[in-house]
Length: 589
Image 1: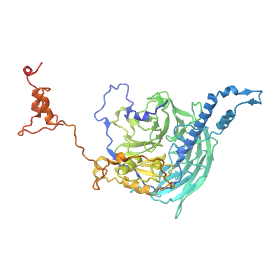
Image 2 (image 1 turned 180 degrees about the vertical axis):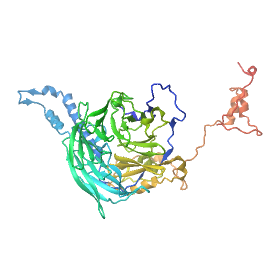
Image 3 (image 1 turned 135 degrees about the vertical axis):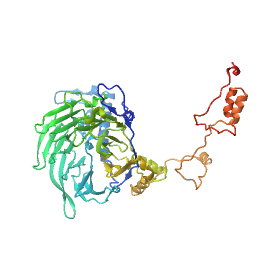
Image 4 (image 1 turned 90 degrees about the horizontal axis):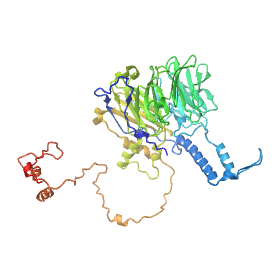
């Protein structure tokens, strides 16, 4: 049986030192993270209250199908039904009904290409982007089959409740990935269709104009715009093929990418822009750099996941390249890596940096922004609401080699569930008819980190449209920070109303013996306060003197317990306590 203990691995960075490294580290090599975090707070109003999480629903349907399949097989094996199978000729056979049932069940597979432990359909760039139109900031997000454009106040980190524009995909097509180019071209990825839209600002409104829709027989796995050629869109499919779409001509060409795979089941892969002449194809176990002109492989690394850990579960699940450099960040089950793509293909792949992110699920989203001076901060998250970590590192670390001044251990900010726990300690967010626990654990489908002066904000978007904001601030500003996230969550949860259900009493328990021992809590008692508990473990002085009288201890130690009023009493916790021992002649043998 497999136990997922990945998240308890040590969270320390591993650096690719040179061959002549002797094991020494500079003073202050491990740098502390100089920021603290407020509790997350909700910045959107509640919606879709009568709907369930589409990300996990998709996995549940597949999981139920797998369980039914195992049960049918177990029935056939346990009842020895294979012995009852008879073949008369090529056209006629006689078999138990259970064979017909399992054959029909196998043909009803809800998705023959998916049976993973996380929903890689939603991986990639996520369903939330921060964009700017005419110097005004907006949040572009997708929920179910709808695309929304919302006004975003970057100073107050608030969203206008009414959407500015909306676009509807087909009813049965949930949007898995949403991206936007600097030219305000939007691409939406569903399972087997990619929508290409254009944001058109009019005099009094903004509208989405549909340009084209690309369809495929196999599921799509990723979409991305070229950072240098703004009119190019990369679309990858499950069979390691990329379609390069020219947005000006609305034409595309398909390229078969290099791969060594036995099956296309769970074959997540993506293509990202590298520089003006190349693009990078990332799969679960390999990274390949292609020439844009010839579409031939220039650099190739296989078995990248085995660089530090020879484990089958350490697949690549997310990747992002820094603009203007050959630095590639990619995440696996265990780690976050920084890799230099300038190495020749004959050189053994050796990441420049490695961090153990400590998350319980596979990372699926990665974002970054500038951090302090000459640094950048990377935010990594999975589809589970508690899995977030931030890692600051020096810009162009791949250029500095072993001269990097230091590294920082990944920092895990609090989650929205921590806010809920703190609120309930203050007797908030208690509603038996409409508990918000399940709502707050809805799967994450998007994440971005934003720089705001000295502060940094992490926005998390879930599959039902809720957006939370976690603000990180410098440590020296702690005294000036007021955290109202508990009250914010309480006010937000008031509008969460589920269908009323009558609570029925199923049993009664006699607690009369407990009731007699209960005491009334005074009205003046304040819940949540930290009260000092008297330490009852200290030994009384009478017991010490009694012990010396019984000669169980050396009499020389008695001086320690005799207090002289003319002398200053030393605290028990002080290290200045001196013990005086008697001469050897007075000691009993």
